[in-house]
Image 1 (spheres, rainbow, N blue to C red):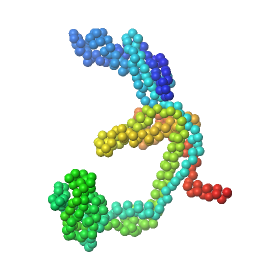
Image 2: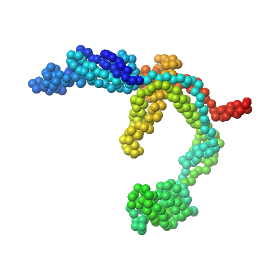
Image 3: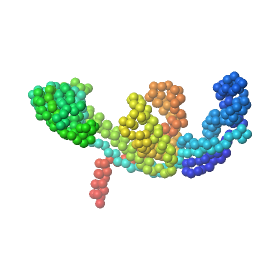
Image 4: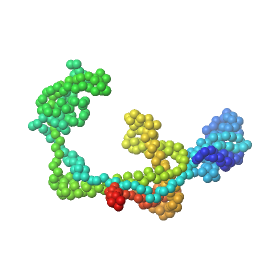
Length: 441
């Protein structure tokens, strides 16, 4: 039971909790009954020794730890409820006294959900910017379609040029001596790809099939092979083949063969529509982000650091699961990226702080606005989740607490309230108004 509740600082309380001698004795007896089958005492068959004999042999407190571990979660929760605290992380618990005669006394340091305030969340002013869809953007999309239909053709009537694939033999020499790894036959290289060291590919451009020539280069100062770093080299090269990428012409036949449309104009119109839809979705997302940022700026209150830490840990765990689904371990990922866990957590810190503040602000707005969620709305949301995951509703209820779901739905309503009351302007409208105001002057 709760003996005392003391506020240590903002959002931090210390609870003193007592477990009666009777309750503790019951827990000790249960611990004995659970453990006795595995206990051996001289003179008794395994599992048959009386409790008093075991305590005399191993000490009176032999079952205390197990007993305390068994009862403290429920005792702690009862005390937290009695203290009317809403916790944001597990309490730090210290056992301060244990005896058969007096029971157990413990202290729990609790971090609580902060009291925050939000004002002026209606009428937030933001500008909605929509990217203009240009002919160049449409052409770029068509170019992607063309590249899907590209084919490789052999070229024998011209010299090699950037963008060609060339098949070459080569051997490299430093100070007239061939070096390891500097030789290959019938190697395919895309000119202009930057696959080889600077200056190499450019010297192949302009040569014809059958040409044998030297390529003179200097290895970079930070080349991965230390013996070659910064040294001049000569590569003996023979050009065997030149292959070019041929793209289909953009005409009605191309459109019929590669899309569901009949003409180039129809395809362009569809691309424009989709790009405009995408631009509008992007603009809506940016507007929502601006509104959320404004709400975050309006929150007042002291937020415990542990809330940010917990959210960062959740984000890291989620990222780890996503990596695992792709067959990669997070430790291997960190090693590959040259980063440690602390560095990864830092990348999530700012985002985590925003998410925590926004959630607290939205929950406060649901309180200020008296937003509620009916059982019917909660059932409808549960049904949506069940449909999304192709699971029976009753199965979903095993994994999702109804109270938490109702809070989420209420927060969603708060979001819609803020957005519906926001004052959203478009750049053009703003310019027109400025011009109008100037004319009035």
